[in-house]
Image (tube, rainbow, N blue to C red; front, side):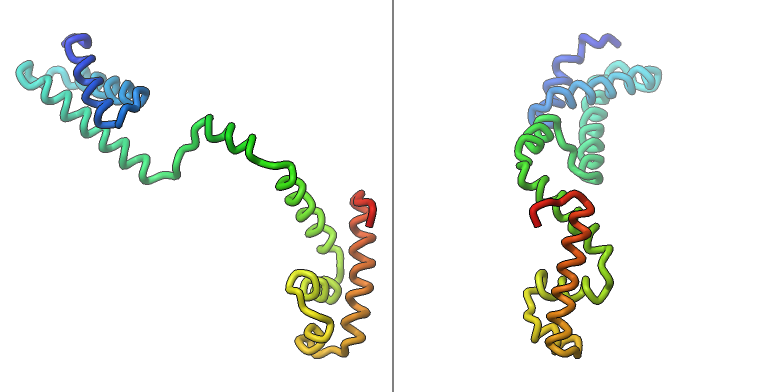
Length: 162
């Protein structure tokens, strides 16, 4: 069997099946011809061409199923677009969030909980007091001392201008 006899017709057929994907078409044709070479003694001369086309079609189907069973591949052009699209603000916000999370981890559980309730959940001191069964003055005092402790923890991490 000679490669040149079937190459162009087989490549055109596979390329149509793959909607014009030249690289994958070449890979499929190469694999098809490799299998034909390995099974040359089992494929009769009269059925060689149909065998090649059926084998190529099956390889296209297998490749499609394999792509569907794993996450979508990201090409280099998408990675470049994504890296250009990431704004410095997004990176700064992420780093700030990590820094703040680290600083919050140093606070006591009581101080951390009132800050989370007050600043993240938007609750007032009265609402926090009712929720936690504490006097309003105690909640205000904890917020005050929690902010002082947080400011100190952030200054230790090099954050200025607080």
